[in-house]
Image (cartoon, rainbow, N blue to C red; front, side, top):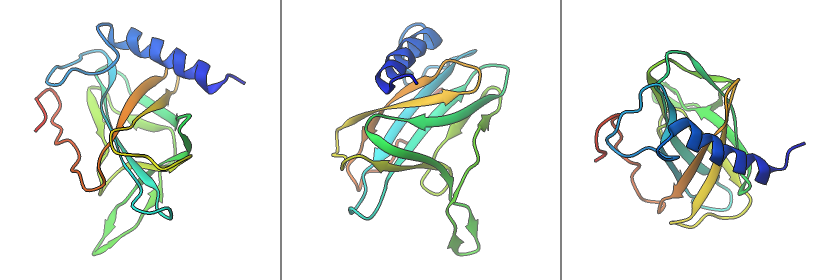
Length: 166
C-alpha cells in the first residue's frame, strides 16, 4: 500500500498539474475546465469530546460529473462527509454515501448547516494551523487542500464563486 506521504506528494504534483499556474485558487478568478479547491477551513473541536469540522469549496469547471471518493490526512484519524438536514426544528446529522457527485460547472460548498466534514483529529488543532487534506476523486488525480484552522468563534469565508470573498 502506498504511504500517505507519497500520496500527499503525488497529490501536490497532481494539484499543480490540474491548475497549471498554481495549486490553489486565486480569489475572484474563474477556472473553466478545471477541478480546484477554492476554500479549505477547519473549526477546531470545542472540547476533547467534540470533533473538529471541515469546510471545503470545490469547483468542478469541467463538462463532466466529478465523484469524490474520500478524504484523508496524516493529521487526521478519520474524516467523514456528513449532512445536517433540518426536519422541522430538529437537525439530524447523517453520513453521506461516497462517492459524492459534483455536477459539471458547479461547486460543492460545505456549510455548518449542510454538507461538511466531521474530523477525528490525531491531536487538538490550534488556530492558524494549516492541515493538508487529500481529496480522492474517482478516475482522476487526487486534489490537495491546505485547510486553515480558524479560531473557534470565527465565521467561515463568505464565498461566491468567481467573486472576491467578503
